[in-house]
Length: 134
Image (cartoon, rainbow, N blue to C red; front, side, top):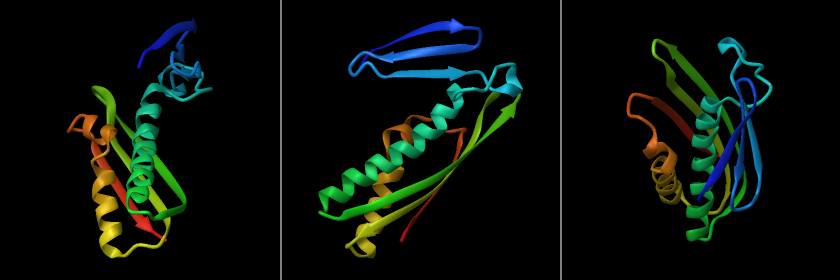
C-alpha cells in the first residue's frame, strides 16, 4: 500500500491513503511544541496496536463462527524523555462475544496478541495488553 504525505503547516502532516483517498492529519503534541489538535505520530502507533488487536479478534471470531457483539478499548501511551520514544502502551480491551467456550476465548486472545502491529513494535516497548470477555 502507498501513502503520500505533505507538511501543510509547521509540525503538522497530512497523509493520503492512495487506495481509498482517506486523509489523516497529525500534529506534534503540545508538550513537544505542537498544537496537539490531531493525533501525534506516537498516538497513531498506540491506537494502531489496539485497532489491530480488535481487527484480529474480529477475524478470528468469524473463523470459529462466533459473533462479536461489540468491543471497547482504552489505550494509554507513556513516553520516555531520553531518548524521546514510546516506552509503554497499555491496552484494556473488553470483547462482548456471543457463543464460544473458554478454549475459544483463549485461542482468540493468543491470536490477537500476535497481531501484525504488536509483532512490529520494538521489543523495548512494554506492551501491557489485557483482554477480557463479557
